[in-house]
Amino acid sequence: MKLYSLILIGLFLSIAPTNSAQAETGMSRDSLAIAISFLEKQPATIERDTLLMYYYNDLCEKSIYAGDPKADLRLEQFRLAQINSQWPISKALYFRALGKKEDKLGDYQKAIEYYHNALQILEEYSANPEHIVYTKILLGYVMLNSGNQEECIRLFKEAEPLALKLHDTSHAIWILDFFADNTLDKAQKESDYLEALAYYKQAENLLPKSLIKNQIPNNLQGQAKVYHLLGNEKKSEEYLALALEQAQRLSNYFIQYNIYSDYAEKAAKKKEFDKAIDHQLAAVSAANSFGYLEFINRSNQNLYKIYKAAGNEAKALETLEYYVSLEDSLMRQEVNEKYAELEGQYEFEKQQNRIQELENTQLQYVLWTLAAILLLSTLFGIYLVKNSRKLRRQNQLLNDKNEEIRLAIEKGSQQERKRVANDLHDGLATKITAMKWRLEAEKPTELSEFMVSELEKLYTDVRLIAHNMASQEFHIKGLIPSIENLITKLNLIEKTSFKLENKLPASRTFKHDLGYQLYCIILELSTNVMKHSNATMAILSLKEYNANLIISMTDNGSQPKDNTRSGIGLLNMKERVKNFKGSVIIRDEEGFEVFIEIPLS
Image 1 (tube, helix red, strand yellow):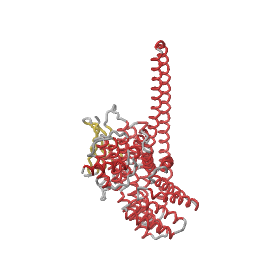
Image 2 (image 1 turned 60 degrees about the horizontal axis):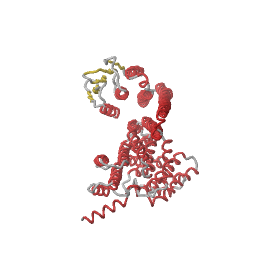
Image 3 (image 1 turned 45 degrees about the vertical axis):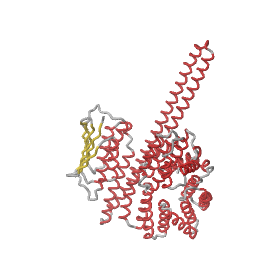
Image 4 (image 1 turned 135 degrees about the horizontal axis):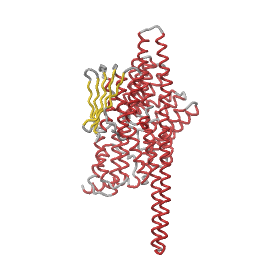
């Protein structure tokens, strides 16, 4: 038994030595769990700790991707293990696993923060290039899903040269497949299709050295799409069938989602809508099994388009409402703002480190000089004081410049949000009003009356979205003036009469983060009243009691039969309140009331 244990230790350590650990082991989850259990019983060494962290990371990421019920338990075990590890890169691997979890859940802000922190640690300690490449790929895909394609391309181009040098070709394949997909999305002529096909073929040549078998159906599906666009339907169908067979054999729901979406798109173009709907419903089912919120969102968007093209307005509207709720939960604009903040913070920290290194070098030089020539100690002391003042002035100038840059970025972001809000209000809202007037001018029918009613709701929603996007006055005016302005604007819609009862002390102030979250909570409450109730009157009350902030929103509307007033908006609001250790009570007797209590201490 002792000899067998020694042989296993040698085998595990030979797979991934400290300086060449790969991001992908090629091992199954069960094999990784057995390896981890064995290694945890061995004496602690740097080699054992490194390999243990490496296996924990691969196990957790594979468990998250596969929707394994044990994923959270394994993440907690990983957290405890990395705390006791003396290998600094273990923290980066743990952050990356957490990023993958949030990525799948669609919380892109948290995913970006974890991936960004992981990348910073990996670069700081000059980690194995494979870990840096893989982390940049994950971060790039989050930026792509958040609508920041430019940053995604930058990260992929940075990673490509390193990826092509690695023994495991899986990372290079992901990058080449992305370049192919990106070329295909923008393609306008045959030469563009051929360029995309060249990328797929280059990736295909690397497949034999990849440790990820799921890349085979992914590559086949991409080539099938190109052959379809080139008019070679026979080859396209052949590749799609092979891809679907491989994806089903590997239980790869992501590729199944893509393939069924391709089938649905082809059928819709031929106006075979029944077949297109069946294929797209299969794509939705595959996306749900895959579990990534981003692809659940996309599959429902495509289903809505097919229902609409097929003339099934009821199903189209139902699917559209679900898609919009998913899209809102992804918070793409906030994600890009968070990424810009992290990038700016990272660059600022690097500048500060360079300044600190300069100061340390200068001080060390002075100390060596003073030790060498004691007779000139007074003169060198004066030199040190003058030089330190100069460095402090330079540091202050740099800090001032960074603050100018931060304010400029914030101002630009506010202007862009305001521009989009104005476009929604002046463009889309105006067109909706014109459509409503035109329908009202026609001879009334049951359909036209329904359309007028829906257009009124849509107009209200657009007004609310435009206001929410333009609500930057919080950062300038503060909480209470912003709420007062919100109430004024809501009353201009003339759907529900809002009244503010502010009983807070005039001296009461809030920290910026809490104040902003309170403003968002009140936005959610007012939007819920406007969108989901038939209330004619609503009262927003703010007061302080026993060191707690009390917020209540009461209206005289009735509870809808479908209980839509308990949707995504209220769930988001509850999550915000929970983050500040508060509580939420909802009553629906004789109207609708939401009662919120948040500790102020």
